[in-house]
Length: 335
Image 1: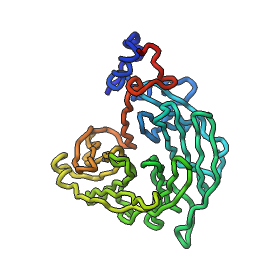
Image 2: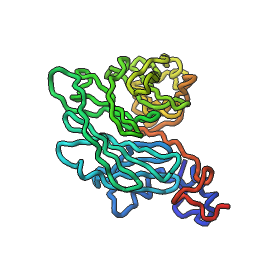
Image 3: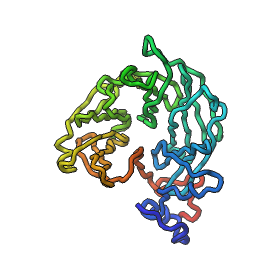
């Protein structure tokens, strides 16, 4: 997809504009954000879902929720009460409302050496709410204990997930999951399944097509497995292995005999896993993005990328004209 010049076809009917936006007018290079005179150009994508992107400005200490298709954004500062030296925060996650597309919440998981708490920003009040501290269960009998984030920005069904260790050395201190209920903001802790307790294992938490939570992992021997969450009691802590497949033959058929240096699970959404594959030959096209259907375990090549960094699949939402009028999305000339 490519951006058309800003202002081109400015007289186009709003209804038609929204329909062609995905292929002509989307701001996928963040032009409107970068041109903002009040914000320094230092943005990092930290979450992407439901047609919105969550960005952090590290220099300005702010967050922005951005819809690239509509050139719409909302920028707000980090919680000042959490901006103290002994409290750190993990990567933020965004929660969107299907009933109210203009409504969202941003959740920061803040922590010190032994405790965690959720800090929530609401678009309705434009304010942060700080929830009570909760002690992190000890997982080592001896040695230093401080919370270190390994990965974040993972959601499945009604839970948000972060993966942490107590000292940042997964070999010495196995990682564990922190789950936050989107509705109640209740925090729970769970051990990472044993098959994922490997420093060479890449995994991500997401959803199957029926929205049931799952974990997809890739090991250095090219095994790709799918774990599903046990449903007893509706907890977020119990997982079982549903399937595991060795993908060497599939990858060789798709990519040829190029040596594979690394296969990372970048994201899991709507029954698909997105894999970042590095062939390590030093060429601009040595890094690829593949999609894996979790139902059939069929691989497809999506694109080549000439950079190394985080991958955030962007799933385009339906244009508002097709689902109703909401707030700033209201179509003044719609019939």
